[in-house]
Length: 286
Length: 268
Image (cartoon, rainbow over all chains, first blue to last red; front, side, top):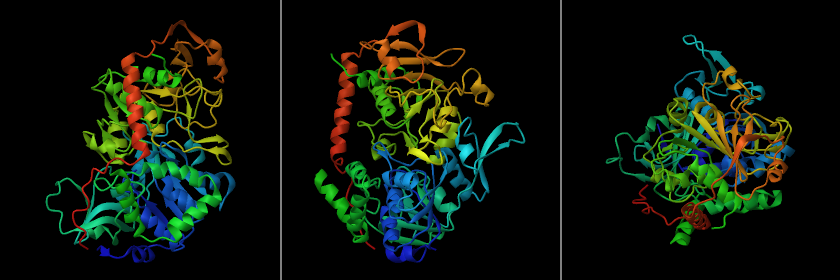
């Protein structure tokens, strides 16, 4: 049953060195505040899973906290490449990074299989593609009914999934709105779920009956971190800080600039700074 | 009106889409072309982004495939597993519109690595949705600027299968869809030869010479029997595209006005 905790405790009590951790959120609701807390707490040797690693994994990788990454698109969307991840892959800095690479379709369905308690996902994919030659986790099976050749990948079952959402109610149920990505599947596929939310409300009365809600009993810890998805966005709360995504290209292009940015904005910061960043963005847009 | 080669590329790409098409929109250049089509000759065009937005109609181009603008203007937003299973794999998409870092003459696309996979010279972002877009959509269109690094004799890695080594390669790989049927560049429009499936030039953009096409292409260029000249951009096409780009630029320079109501309550 979900417990309300401050972010430091929610992370500290639920993660260990070496864990397989999924941070999900598809452009919308990326759990930056939780990732920064993990960096501050010195957790390392992580195997990270995420469809679109984005800046959040560039930061964890650049700080040397990651031994392996399972992913399907590693870019700064619309801007370019992930510089810290490239440095790890191409030059082993600050440490080598093992990659397990899939397509979006495979990742999404592997989470779904994890949530469904199945050992693997079966789908029509990877035909003619080279990824099966370099990822031994991609196999092909024959449909026993039609004879069609289909791709199979092992289900994803993280030790811990972390998501950011708009709201929790007082019981600890969590409401996710806007682009849903694979948050629900990643949460239900994991052994443990930590959620950061924008706010706590008394109840979800008036919410659409088909809304995406994770019941309190599927979640371990909830922390209220307003702005916790910045520089991504929280649908209905604040917009994506596209300027910050563009700026990351400059920050991440140089190791020293990156490290000093992380020192100032992550290591010497705390979860409250996210609300201030969103507030600053609001003022500049006004 | 005078126009740039990039404008010509986007406009030529937009024209390839029909009003009743359902398009899976790749990020970057395809997004501009698909939205231009919707804002000009194809108002009924259905745009789908892999983030799960179906029937979206953004007023500015999204920087990412999941910007809030896409959800706000969509008919509905589904989860990503549903998007890939029911809508893409289910065969409901008529055109997949992709960009590419590298492409070969048979329309095989590489967005994964330059060099060896395990010791890459350049690590690119990877496939994202493209490997299955390339095989599940009824057909795919590709757009990219021409360069010797982009149009290559052989791709370093087949991220998304086109026509393999040509001919019946798709059929032999168990793929029932048409694959790449159109390559739109800043210089020309290419279509696959009906037998060999090699991309050949079917139309040249106004003011472009054959030597320019060959200089920026890594394989010996072949031409269709009757090569046309692409119709130059109309005033309407140019104005709509420039408006769209200007709105997009302004939106990226600062966050959009916060549509949101501040948090209603912060109890707890």
